[in-house]
Length: 193
Ligand SMILES: Nc1nc2c(ncn2[C@H]2C[C@H](O)[C@@H](COP(=O)(O)OP(=O)(O)OP(=O)(O)O)O2)c(=O)[nH]1
Picture (cartoon, rainbow, N blue to C red):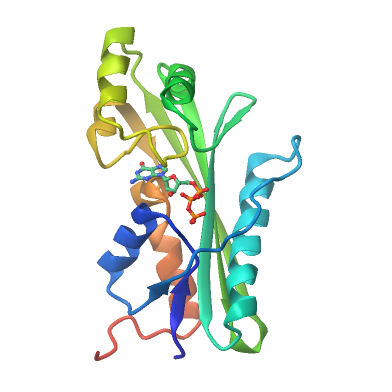
């Protein structure tokens, strides 16, 4: 198989791909992540995952390219990555004591026009915690770079009352689906180095 590029700047996605052990390299997609205001979250993440993958594939047409995008949906609100601590506080205030859905889209492009995608949801319910506890969680800084302002594998798990779905999906890459896409595309996931 020709080389695999993870079209991502996300450290969380790199950690998950490192765990899989398939040789890959990373390249920043460098795309505009604006989508129409009223676009449903599941359509937005799919559009952005394809946009990221295509941007990198244009630079490397002989490579395989894997990209993803994630948004949080709670009620009618769609949340991305917070810009600052105040935005993170607002996001977590919205999530605490409620159930929200994480939508993650993954797109795999390959030579010869290969195009496969997956869209995975996970449902999470958070405990309702007092403002003082929320401030202590914000102090951890886990909110930085995370859609929804928490890390499910970090101290954020102390907020988690219930999780339905693939935990790796919450972290940024639904690895059950990533493995399926790679196997369907013909990758040998235990190839000799
Ligand atoms: N470590 C960790 N990261 C999380 C968690 N929840 C969300 N994230 C991160 C994964 C992604 O980096 C980010 C979702 O935002 P995006 O899909 O826009 O990706 P991002 O812009 O970070 O990277 P990329 O577009 O792939 O270059 O949030 C979590 O529970 N743990």
